[in-house]
Image 1 (cartoon, one colour):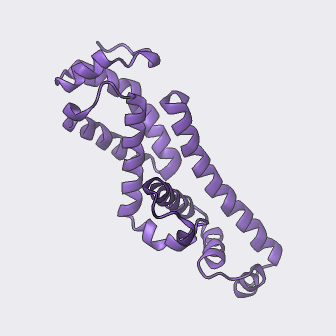
Image 2 (image 1 turned 180 degrees about the vertical axis):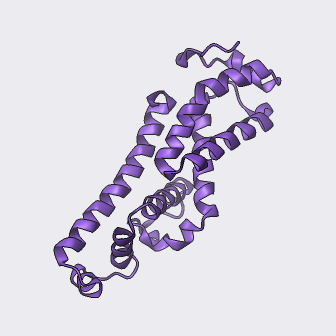
Length: 197
């Protein structure tokens, strides 16, 4: 059973077969999702090797935890969550989160700490911003850090780096664009599911 599955037909029956240890069901799901997951991870981490490794790890985890899958729940959402968690764990393993924890546009004191959902969203946003920041060109990243972490004004950054204020403003605009692109990519991925890839 190596034929591709109609994307709308990832059925509870197929998931039941996977949960029972059916290798053909696993292979069908692997063929359906692997390339799209790998492509999505690559768009975030900008490394083909890391994307390949993380995608493979996701499927190892899927196989090892197959009995825990709920066939009544949305399988696309399940795979999305596994992928998102793999990327976030990779970011944490690089200590990007700690290095760039001050680069958030969200301020922790503005978060409703009584709401677990708002804390999760804030943490995930923090990780996405950290990811975007980690891939910025060196000068842009330095300017962004000086602005967000050190709270320097554009004139101060320009003076310290011996560049024009316009250059600082341009790099900050590009930095915010980089961050928006990563956040938008994840939002689109979540809204559209794996069908977008």
